[in-house]
Image (cartoon, rainbow, N blue to C red; front, side, top):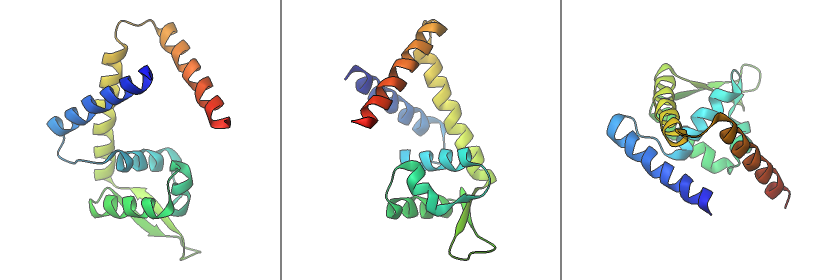
Length: 137
């Protein structure tokens, strides 16, 4: 429960800093989709994003529509299969994603200040172990 409270507090601070510093406001899911598209690299197929993010296809379509409307991503029709769309992050989308990442990384550094690297690594291993275990339940 402590981890959840820390996560909630970090999220509150993250949102506050975004509101103070950035023009373009994204929801957590929009930011997550930008990160997922970026992680996938080239030839990101729209249909695969629902699985990658663990979200329903209709939710992903709304997120894609919103990001496309904000000119943060664009759809490109697959050259051999018109039923498929590739997703590409635009220059504006890259800039916004990097601004969000910068704020996120600054916050993580602040929170971890005063901890030894070995403590952070141990905590990360424990959380990863617990996550894997709960996913099997």
